[in-house]
Every structure is written in structure tokens, then in C-alpha cells.
Amino acid sequence: MNARTVAVFAALFLAVLAVMGLKSQRQPVPIRELPAGLYDRVQLSVSAATARNEQATRLCESEINMILAREFPEIEQAADRAAEEVSTYGSCTTIIYRLAKEQLGWSASTADYVEGEIRSRLQPSLDACGHELDAALASCELALKESTVTLASELAQANPSATGQPLDIVVDVRTSGDLDATLQSLGIGGGVLTIAGTFDAVAIMNTSLVRNLVAKIAQLAASIFAKPAATAAGSAAVAAADGPLPIGDALAIVGGLWTGYEIYATRAEFEQEIRTSLTNALPEMKRSVHHQIMERIRVLQSDYQRAQARIRNQLATNAYR
Image 1 (cartoon, rainbow, N blue to C red):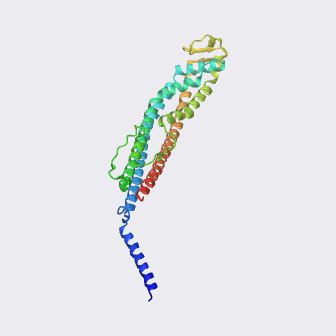
Image 2: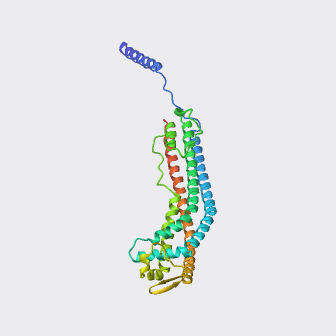
């Protein structure tokens, strides 16, 4: 081996020693280990949240059914009383008087009168039922909120950067912003929860009453009392009347004679028609309200389930960083 070859090998040897020396001086880069069983922890938390959601909605559905079963007999009794009181002799004379004034083009809405008389008697029972239904839905949503916060807290605990976050957080559904503020404190970005629409059981029940019941009864009144109203409209006595027709024992009007007995017989027919209308309308109202509430419960469960999926994606992703 000549001197030139020896020099080359020596240079290579020195170069290798230099590289090894540099490597020995570098600090090792630590590999961040994931918490043991992280995937299992995430899946368990998500499964538990789903189970809580389903339990909350099942309980709500059961409570809704109990409320309707308990309250609608009260509504039916109130409707029965309304039919009796709206079809009294005095009420019928008022209806005849108003119908006559309408035919003459004067301002006297029979429909408004009938609606007011029926509504005033049914309103307390309808409102009581509606408020109970709304309270049951609010309780269900509170349970879904608490389930959502529990999931967020558990997943935050699984994220090493969120150590020390509280596990048990109570959310008051009556205080707006609590859920968002709590989620933000756990590292969740805004906009995870979007509830579709609003729900007001009281308004729904009263709307059903106005649209499906009162209008029909007002039409019944106009039909049943059409003849005495037309006769009254043709009488000069109506023009001078300041209130319901002064029938007394007998109502003698130009073009015909309506005795108290005849009006009483017509009143009995009117009462029976109102009862029939109420008997047919209330069960349909109950079915409609029940269907809308069950659909609302499904919407809430779906919306919170999606929110929880977004939370899982955010916090579970952070845990892998």
C-alpha cells in the first residue's frame, strides 16, 4: 500500500470519526407517546353519551305520553262544558242577532263571538297541557346538554393538553350561553351545536283549536241559525236593537214567528253539533300534537348527536397531535 492510499484511508477514517462525534452531541427528539388505551377511552365515552341521549329521549317520550293521557280528558271535559254554555238560549239569541247584523253589512262578527266563547272555556286546559309538554321537552334538552358536556369533559381529559378539566359540569338550560361557554373552556370551538327551529306546544295547541275547531263551529252557527237570522235581518226591530234580540217568551218578526220553544229546539241541535265537532276534533288534535312533539324529540336527539360527533372529532384529533 503506497503512501497516497494510506492518506486517503486516513482521511476517510477521520471523516467518519467527525460525523460520529457530531451525532453524539445532538439531543435526542422525544417521541410523544399516546395515552394507553386512548382509542378505547374515546369509544367508551362516545358510546356512553349515545346511551345517555337515548335514555333522555325515551324518558321524554314516556313523559309526553303520560301528560297527554292525563290532560286530554280534562280538555275534553272543558270542551263539553263549552258546548253546553255556548249553546244556551241567551247565547243563541246573541248569535242570531250577530248573524242578522252581518247580513245587513253591520260590524258584528259571529265567528269572533263563537271563538271568544269557546276559547275562554278551553284556554286554561289547553295552556296547562301545553306548558307541561314544553317543560318535558326543556327537561329532555337539559339532559342532552349535560350529556354533551360530560362527553366533552371526558374527551378533554383524554387529551394531555387538557389535564385537570372538571368532569362534572352542570348546565342550566334556562341560562343562555352556558353550553357554549362551558365547551369553550374545554377547548371546543364555537358552532358545534345548531338546533333546527323552535317549538312551542302552547301555541301549537291553540293554533289547532283556532284553525280546526272554532271556524267549523262558527260555520255551524251560521248554517243552523240562518233562517231566524235572515228573518231578523229583514225586521226593522234589528235596526233599533242595541244588543241581542229582545226575544222574551216569543220572537215575532216580520216574515215569520219564532217562539221560545222553536229557538230552544234549534239550540239543542246546535249544542249537539258542537259536541260532535269537539268529539271528532280533539282526538285528531291530540294525535297531531303527539306527532309534532315526537318529531321534535327526534330532532333534538339528532342535533345533539351531531354536536357530540363534532366535539369528539375536535378533541380526539387534538389528542393525537
